[in-house]
Image (cartoon, rainbow over all chains, first blue to last red; front, side, top):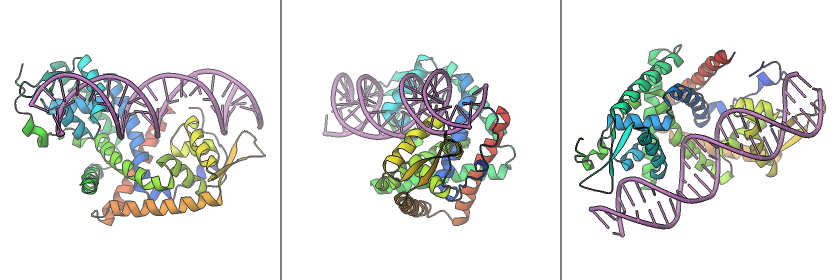
Length: 163
Length: 163
DNA sequence: TATTGTTATACTCTATAACTATA
DNA sequence: TATAGTTATAGAGTATAACAATA
């Protein structure tokens, strides 16, 4: 980007007072920045947020199925297929046919996948702590905890509606 | 290799302990739910999150340019064009050529746009307060305020990096 | 030369219907 | 019939290069 240089006196004066009180707006703004940053952090490992998340879940839960993974990742099953394809082609995970129910795969991480997962996790943790430096630790924990509670809370409400 | 071993009982036991400590993961999960919900709330007004946000900015800041709007919305100028096209075709806003600098448009909301904006805003506020019922008011304010601070904080860091 | 708005384009993420193979 | 995984496809949102008009 070149210099910001006075677009007009109005540039610095754009008011967002109405929107700034809305949770959805603030969530989107904050998430956009964090998402962009996380993407950069994962780039050296050739992982995206979705492939990274899937890999961590598989490492932590060896043997889980694609349906289970899609459910906990809050994405549709069809969208998970190419994510798993990509991880499998890179030999980071393996699809193992379940003998007792040949419809599904038991997903497991390879040694290579486990190593990459560990390295990527370290990088993400380090990067996030750098990003958040300036915010005190208590506020950070409070934020993460509130977001988690929010997700549970809203998900519960949504499931009520669908029931 | 290892046995697949009873995956069925595993469904409710998928662990997300590693990811749950990561800000990016929690942000994405919470934002996904809120985004979906906000989309539903705006549907009766035939607005999406992006057209809604642009409309509110224009109502609050009559005369601002597309470049300015794109900047405060954190999106690229090309992507704003179709958003403005849509709002203009629905006669909710108008593009006015600036006489002193004929390269840019001064964006203004029509009466119809102002009315729709007000109604949509009321619906969003009402819906968000319903969504958040169960969370105490102090936590809600704290969350919104922390998200805002986070955005400013990260944006500042990013601008440092690019400077 | 630089900036505003624009076109074209491509990539990612998401959502749905319909198919196959198994149960 | 129901479920797991898959294919195809369409719609959003996002990002970059390049252009015309204007400064």
